Length: 482
Image (cartoon, rainbow, N blue to C red; front, side, top):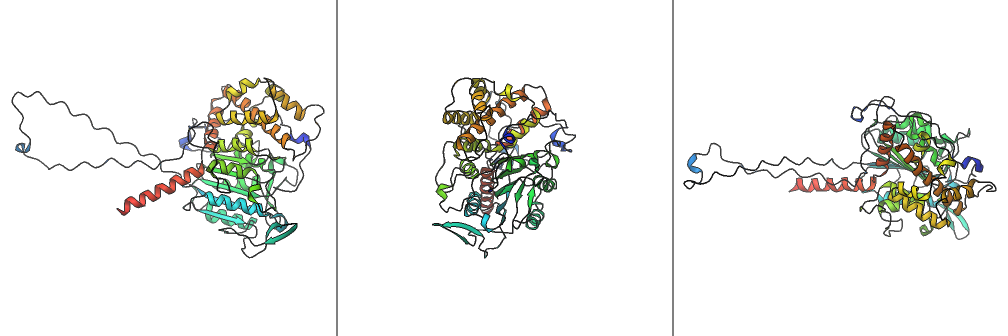
């Protein structure tokens, strides 16, 4: 979120991706990403359940019981039926994941540290079970500084933060210290990162290395964060949700060094971002009424948790009707319902554009019925909803939407134009569906397996897993107390 203007319209048009392939060894060995063959895709993860209790112990039998102790058998009794073999013990399910969370929030100075950003941080904290270890960086790290901007009638005013927890400042020093003392202290546990603040294009106009703006000046770039993540074991899952402008560049954390031409990283890293790498995002208002907040992360977390920031129950995000909402479904829910100029991005979108070289004119010529048939339930719901909102009809609606947005006479779009943003969401989602189909038909088994693994990771729900882990610990303590 920032007041910076977007780049020219030409930068918004999807670029032809470079073709590449993935190679490697089996996943259990966990070698480096350059030598690893990706493991087969795992099914979408459901909320983990507490591990099964071991079978009840059988009553002990007396040692060397004398024959007389056995019940007498009638004469000429038929032979006793052989005793059924004892069923093997049920293998316990894996323990639920012990997620930890790091929140990085606030603007670079008080006039850009709007009350809505503070609200985003507070809402996210409220969704985490109390047992989840977390660290919260916000603004200058002080509870006494009047660092939060808010609108009081027609006057702009400032007050001190009102967050339940602040552990440090959103500065380079604060981030590095927290990473060293908190994140690296438990390197194997899954990590959930939430960034709520402002973002800027890279000062050298390298839109693949954009930055999150830090308090007092400077920024945390894509490659800065990639370097920190390389300090974690390869098998540490990382989930990022980033609400700032130009945040889509951070999807490059899929690649070594955060560089879009780098090798795929070994770890399961997935991210959901409020905007493409060349567009601003909404959500940094000084308005105090949270009922009016329509930013990407508010919709995403409302769908993922089932509770919006006002405490209201959220329904309609379980698109596959399996009584579980994954991050992929929460992303589709935000695409469908967010009435702003945001054009969100998922890591799988960037993966497909890197490895599938299919020109836009071919992609957009795909009949709409085929696109729907290749879509997941969440993708299908978002495509249908966006298509209805845009008034698109017929089998050639991909081409119609693309020509309206990028064709002759389209001109430069206003980045705050909601209709244009909906059209871009529709185009990008349809393109991802078509590219995924092309990848699955490519015969590149290693690349397909890596993509399916990424999609499975995007279908997890860290909030549900954290809640299950918390419940499992409580159950263990109760059993131990009996």
